[in-house]
Length: 282
Image (cartoon, rainbow, N blue to C red; front, side):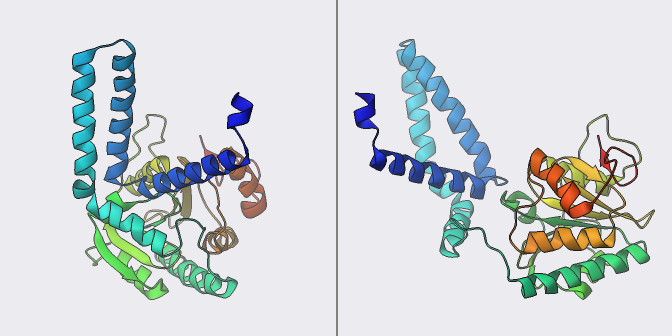
């Protein structure tokens, strides 16, 4: 009986619906809406338990609550829904957007040039490169930029007299999205006291998203990289160029343990990754 119900058309139907749900969740992660979705999921599970044990009053209460939440979602989360529809219109809902090799090279040149200047003059900086996970909660409370990615603009943002220099800059593949962004700090007790606020903020945002975070130390003038809650110190210029080219070319970089290990060998050429200088900080 089950074999008769599951045919090729059913499998295609299930695959399409699964893909749509996945892409919607990817667009909503990092926004306020994802917290509501978690709450609705929990209430739905509780409703199932109440229905299973025939708790009529609790079942009625949860059904009424879930109905009210469904009716209020389009109003409360109108900005998130609008953004999701914009992403669908831009084609980013179903494909991974990447730049041509020439466009990627131009952006890499501007960013590496800015980082080289900041490093040489020991100007602290924090650049967050957004990937699939949305960072709307952090850009909404920051200063919107929506500007071209240029070396001069990045340097000027982190110049000590600029009001935005203390916060982070969030970028995507096409623009500087926002400046003066305040990020969640990693407060794990095993983190070394060597790290300042910028490094803790970089680790914090990398723990809650798939963002790639580049930090320029104001004290030492070196460059570090935070991905998935892990930190690599003393990143070299050629390593940055390879990483950024992968990012702007639309390739998914450093988003899982296997991919992290592969990227360490293919992109960074780092040996003895567990060492304190240049390796992974456990």
